[in-house]
Length: 158
Image 1: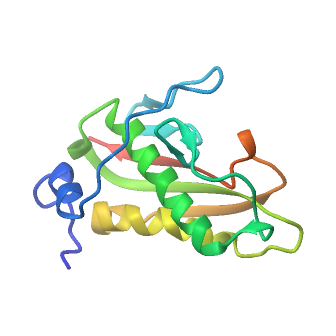
Image 2 (image 1 turned 60 degrees about the horizontal axis):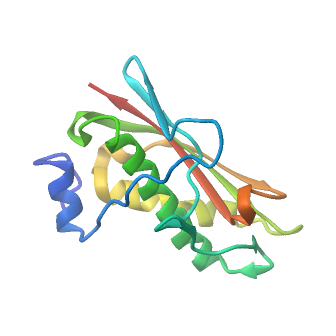
C-alpha cells in the first residue's frame, strides 16, 4: 500500500479506496461546521450522521459495541473531512494535526482509544503519512442527540 497518499489527488485516493464523502450536514445549533484561521482548519464536533440522521444512539459499554463505535468514529471522521472540503480543496491539506474524539461511555468502559481508532485509521488511509496526528480520546457521560461518538479534527493547509 502506498503510504504517501498525497501523491496524486486526495479525491483520487478517496476514489481508489471507494470512499465517498458525505454532504455536510446543516449545523444542529449556532456554529459553523469548520473554520479556517491562517493555515489551520478546525472542524466542529462531527456526529455519525448519515443522510442527516444518527447512525446509532447509545453508549459504549451499554448496547454499543467497540466494533460499532469504531465504525461510528470512522463516519464522524469522514464527516469532518467533508466539512473541510466544503471550505477548500482537499489537496491543499498539508497534514492532519490533531484529532479529538469523545465517546459516550457507560461507567467502567475504558476502550475509548479503540473506538477513536476508527477515525484515526480512516484518516491514515486517506492521507497516508500526512494523516498521522496527535490525538485525545475522551470518555463522556452524554453527547448531543444521544450520539455514541463525536470527532473533531484540525488540519494544516497551504
